Amino acid sequence: MGYGNIMKIQTSGASMETAQQDRLPTTGVSASHTMAQTDVGRMEKYRSKINKVGAKYGIAPALIAAIISRESRAGNCLKDGWGDNGNAWGLMQVDVNPNGGGHTARGGWDSEEHLCQATEILVDFIGLIRNKFPSGSVEQQLKGGIAAYNMGDGNVRSLGNVDEKTTGRDYANDVVARAQWYQSKGGF
Image (cartoon, rainbow, N blue to C red):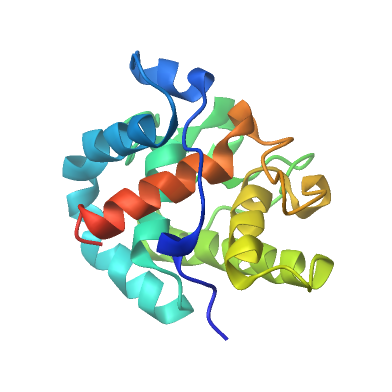
């Protein structure tokens, strides 16, 4: 069973808090699309790795690119591969904080190994959300898994408002909107 079609997920896009990171005058899907487009040039150097990892795990490459865009702006906001005050590693910001995700960083910050680790974490969260909300549609479960990637499956309390506890209260909605842009306009 696939993980769903990212293009079929309803999304409200970026919140004001997220859009303000780029000093954008708008919010919502258009802000998410603008941020994805801003990152597409930097994303290009990771395209082959993203496509390979997406194929390996059955995850849309556009979704991996969108998480990279949201988490690290395609590496642009990392310091020696680290972000979140040293609590997260790599393009997809794997949580290494023992009080958070507690993962051990694998591979170089921009390596295929890192992308595999982060995508495995995403796939695990999608599975946890499927088990938690078995009556939800595949797309709802995918969106819930994206939210869980940001703040854990325990904080996803319903499929109706998966972003209730996420960073900016828009993580899944923003990532979905960016993924839709990467798939339709970014060539992923």
